[in-house]
Image 1 (tube, rainbow, N blue to C red):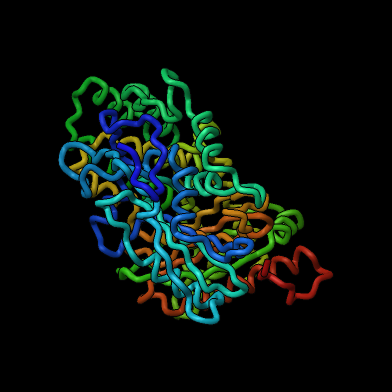
Image 2: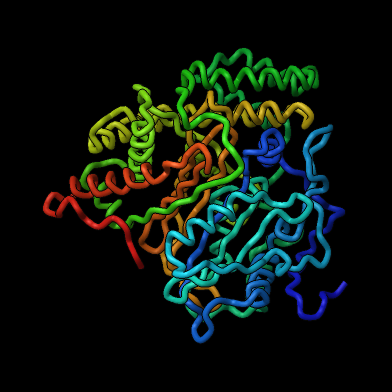
Length: 511
């Protein structure tokens, strides 16, 4: 059926509902976490701040709809909805085409109150990220935000974690933007998108894996982390159809517990891991990428070590201000890992594993805290086993039927395993544009699971690293304590890396 006049319908790529694809168990996990607790919001998001469009200011809803239709038309998930809004039963929900899907239906407009500064944008973003997506519609939403200082505007986005992981969302964001102020025409964008799709008959980016091969890989993954015999028995029994689904489920739960007990020894209990509400606070900190590189060059380690140390410094100050005893072994952070191949840069769904890192919040000196972070991350990398164990648990969980999977999903995101999420996603290095307007900033969001009151998302773009800190509105009214400590830690690390510079070196970058 042709598109309605004046609409921005997605370009169809031949994907038919007759060939509809079911969610993977990992993708469905993020739906189940929301179903289990109203406080869990499992959407990824970002606030992208732009200069004014030359001669115009902010884009119209129709302009943005046409841009999205041209650029995202090659990605089926953006014009599909779930076959059922809830998981459970004997099969996972499937992705179902929404015929004549109009991109503009997912775009709205908002305006900040005067003066449209950072405080006003943070307050609006906090409200926006507090609202869940409607599962009866395609699971994404965008808002054009006007009224920013200096005539700027922002594009706020939310996408459900069941559709895409953090790295995938950056890839999609890159697809929407141009590397020069001259935008690519819609017809040309559609043509280049079609050229990137595999020809008919060739395998897609995410090939199906036979159950026997999957179980064989799980056995190898667990070797050295846990006794091989029980896992080998599990693999053999499942391949031959002997293992009952409930036994598969119980063993997967036992495997998750094994990670906590044998490898991690359990995360400490803190005030950051109590019941939370549905409202969020959202704040952003900026650091020039050159400063973070200077720190790692002078002190050793990696950019990620710098980011984790800065985050740990903020968490330490927050706990100290509450009079808490700091855990001597550290606060447990879940650090998602990208496991997608280069050929999968536009494949949606989740291609992630996780590492669990004990960040040294008990160390009083910032520089020593950094060295301890470097040592711990190096030891974790050299061991090379924990991520494999996590992959194995996720793989085993996929053998459990949907009706049993929800409890396992909660076990994988329980406070027993980790206290806080810290995710670091490298973004584009070059300057990008939308509709001729220069992209200035990217403020990233990581979801909060139940009883996890704080999360840190880090993304680099065009020479600046942005820390997006999300927190529960009710249990973390003191978020500014954490933000101030993160700024102070950044200045201390930079001063140590460049002794000739004043200790009050600039940390915030205003483009």
